[in-house]
Image 1 (cartoon, one colour):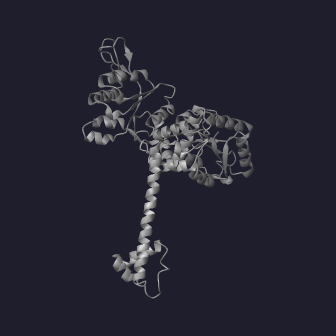
Image 2: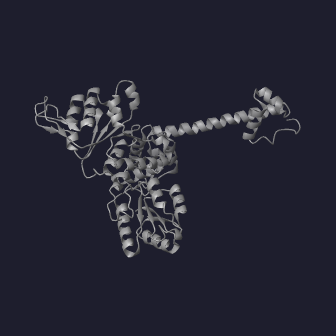
Image 3: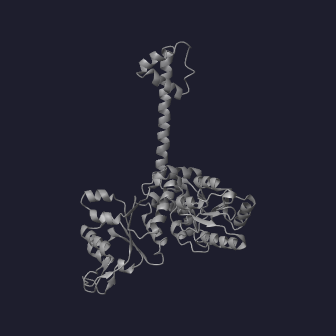
Length: 450
């Protein structure tokens, strides 16, 4: 089911739409015009936005003719629909909303619908990109910005470089680009460049002819030829040997595939998406990566933020993984204990989303009840939580010692702040500020002595 925003300037008509859509099981928020709609969009996430049939395009009705354009610009990944007029419009809207929500099994907060349904596209058209984006989970600002960029990139055929730390989901982005593009009905192939020695990597990408090398007993198509008209995703491209980099550059320049041991080239149409967890500019400076290839690959760069930079997504990801693994293992684990959530939020996640996913899988496997607890997590997470608590206690202890020392010094000098500051070797301003922080600025010894 979808989380929906209905924008309708006529209250009675708006309530009708809300009832109709809630009866289908959707979560519906009503806005009475463009101003409130923009406010709602800024404070929450929606899968579908419905512009009511009454008043839009009519200045007399108080509608903002720029609202649709604003929504397309600000939320390109969200389906925007015109409700239409009468029963036909209602039927088409219900069909489109049903399709949008049924194509994704993710939670409403995680769901994104990049294809727009507008007055120029009937609501019954297929929302191809729904499934593509449903695998990328997040509602933080960095993730919303990322999804907007991916939605725009998918509309092009430009070579794209996806960067980010290990475990951030670079291949998911590559798949989303493919599935939201015009190539969605063609082949998507993924290959880790670091998984093959140089001779085999060339064969994997470009194919080989029988007898080209020992063990080549039959002709074999390479990845690029197999994915003609589709998309190839090359991960860990920074690990590619320099000689293979030259061959990849030639392919990007010419579109020409020449199998190992073959003489006749073939031309293919492949959209290339590459990924790395390294800084390719640094690799270029170090002489480990070709500068000309770097510029060919980074026509459109996309950077995935690490999980530590979007802590507000941790709980959403954890609950999504919990539901997935509980169902897969047939276990009755339904929720996460508040203390366990604190452990997850405070951990630094060097392995990013993949590490969090593995942590929840392990926790569900070990959980003996219906609530996931911190004791079900690996010990390194619990130790990190203990370190944070201990550090907090230490800071509190130091503050207590400082407060006691200042108070005793003031007592020794009869409340004379200037003299106390000299003994403490701080300025009177600093002393006053510390007293204020301790809530002691009005409780220090005899008046007229400070």
